[in-house]
Image 1 (tube, helix red, strand yellow):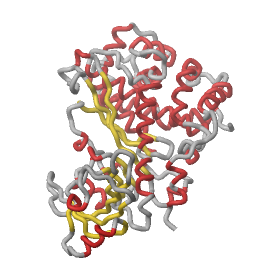
Image 2 (cartoon, one colour):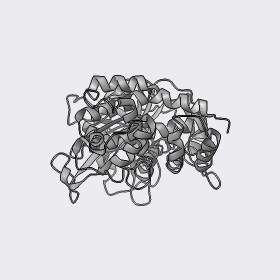
Image 3 (spheres, one colour):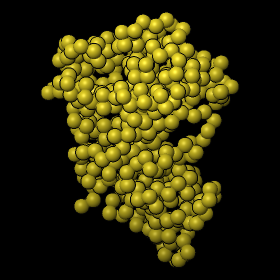
Image 4 (cartoon, one colour):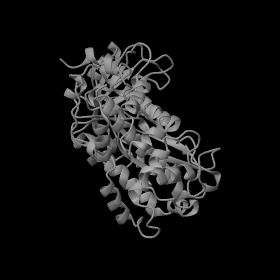
Length: 430
């Protein structure tokens, strides 16, 4: 490992610069009273506390704040800062500042980067809250109170690009990120909860690509066939206006080999009601068939579409990392604003983990299960080295042992495993 402390400090300050954090504090009204709690020190203290073991809360954040700022503050004044809407706005603005640069053009040396500007996975995770917050954040079924965090990441390095917090009751279809957050030419991956057909049309019109699962049949009309059984090809050839998918494939039926079709779908919600042409790939499975809608051209073989969609699993790894290593398994507060502050702090801790991972290993090499360094293990490594890591933001001591410890714990054990990143290589267009 060649990374040094100086490089680490620069990487972290680029994400959470003190001047920018203080400016956010003034804009949101966080810096108004109790000026002993500065915005930048407050953000760093709460973020670093999310790496702590157990259930880190107000007390652990206050300890780190005192260590960072050199200012002693009593527990209640410090705790009250969490309970303001301004603190929520401050952490949300800090997250936006931290991820904004990653949404720009990044150098990614991977064969897939030749075909897509970025590959973005979108999903949400549910966070359990205290039962007393049920009026503000009602839960689903047996859960009294829950919060939904919608997250978009780049699968190249599992870098966060977008996040928002909402009630669990809001449907995923209403939470799709603004397309302006992503670069033209990006590939977006998401499940069918995010995929009203009108949104797929918007993505294509914005010059982006998508692969999304389709609800079984989804009222698709077959217009053309590239791969399918003979009886399907004959049926479509005899019907110039198209054949409903449900007429040639029952919802309970399973395909025996991969199908590759040109279809149109008909939006039934939203303002856009015109038929939308797209590509449908149906893959056989052990228990049922899998349906994938995409606007990727036929220069990509049908086998590549399911493998591209499997890259969406990377965001499940991130959600698991947030809960296992960044304290989102439980949020220790009964105040709705404080709960959101802690969740935003965990999301910011994710950006800190990624900034450290990039110092340890170039981002372009942090792709897939065969990578030497695992970005998700970096959060666990920082958790184990929290005491030393906090001191790293002050005087420079023991920098190399700290980075060596993080690098060692983030190194994969055992032989590399093949994943979709590698299975896609022979499937790339000629």
